[in-house]
Image 1 (cartoon, rainbow, N blue to C red):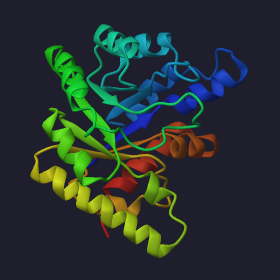
Image 2: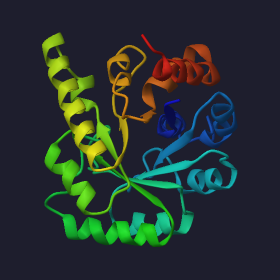
Image 3: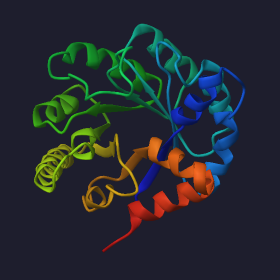
Image 4: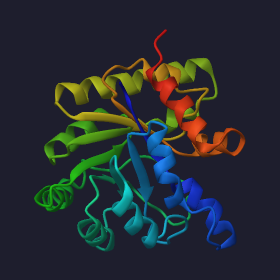
Length: 240
């Protein structure tokens, strides 16, 4: 069974639009886990635009599956992660003006820094995933710095404007996954995946986990979050 990580930032975004107390992302954790989610993904941004520190603290106490903390590789966030002790840390690039994460990390040019970060997390028994573009040099660099998992960005594929472009981007993902598999890295995928476009990505057997947020929360507006999670879990495990 392929695993599904549900990103809760989009619930927090709705709450923060009014700076109120609802909907509370923490309330949804039990519902989502019972519906089949294998992990809860939360991105604590420097500007706290959606997920708040209290969300993360409460989530850590009640999650029964796994907590995957997405974070920028900054001193503040490293300290937070070491205090919270999520099951997995996913390091992502971050710019304040972006609507959502744009592109993957530049690992190859910053290997010494990433080695240091990853050593700190491993010493705390935290699994480390690096969010990277489907670039072979970045995959190899992720292996050399000691990452456990690479999360392949599916942004280019998700934003494809034609069938030809989509096929080209899928092939790049396949090539990246093959390289990661040879290097014995765990492989996840995420960014821009929806109920409509995910099927070709699920055919890549070595991808064992999909981290999805916006599409699930958007579907939940109409179906409820439990049904939205069940539908996506069925999608990623369907076979032609």
